[in-house]
Each structure stands twice: as structure tokens, then as C-alpha cells.
Amino acid sequence: MKNSEIRALSVEELKERIATSTKSLEDLRFANAISPIENPMQIRDARKFVAQLKTELHTRTIAQVQEAVSKGELTRENAAEYLQQAKLPSSAKLSLLKKLISQAGK
Image (cartoon, rainbow, N blue to C red; front, side, top):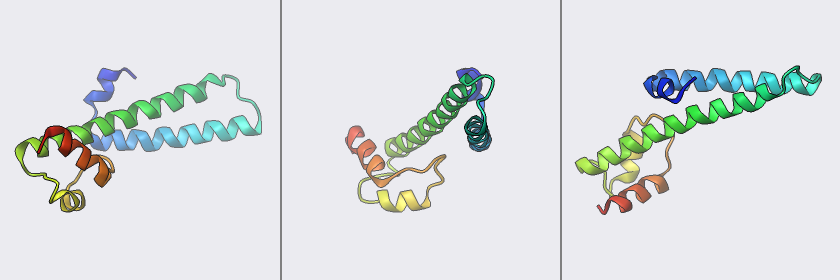
């Protein structure tokens, strides 16, 4: 799957693909442990694909947080509350939010 196709996926589709790809990677690893699979490069390709999907999801999370900072909805004072209430695409930590706020200079 190309990066442009990954970017076109919705957040729900990304999460679904991550779950199914992680499961298939796990199955490949188990199959390889029992008896060597015919093409061991499948494991590397599956691992890279999962990483690409997770990277895109994280990029969207950062973009959403930066947008909230630029609108003034997110400040250092309300970062913890925002983290609890916001529906971010992926999990984010308070330290990430504070880092993005300080980079924006707010």
C-alpha cells in the first residue's frame, strides 16, 4: 500500500488496519517459529507496514493537537483536562502535549 493510500484512510480505517496487520504479523511470527516460512521477508514487510500505519496515526494526532494550540483551545494550564476530554486519533501523553505547546510558544 502506498503512502498516499494510507493518508487517504480515515482514522477508524487506520485503527482497523493496524489491528488486523498486527494480528497477521503475530501469526507470521508464530508460523515461522514452528517451522520456517517460505518467504521470511513477509515478516519484515508486515512489520514495516504496521509501522507506516502507526506513524500516520501519530502524525494525525500531532496535527490535531497543534491545531488546538493554534486556536487557543489548548494551553499548559488545561493540557491535562484536554487530554482527558479530547478524542485524539491515538493515545498521547501529557508530556507530548506540553512539548507541542512550548514549541508553539503559548
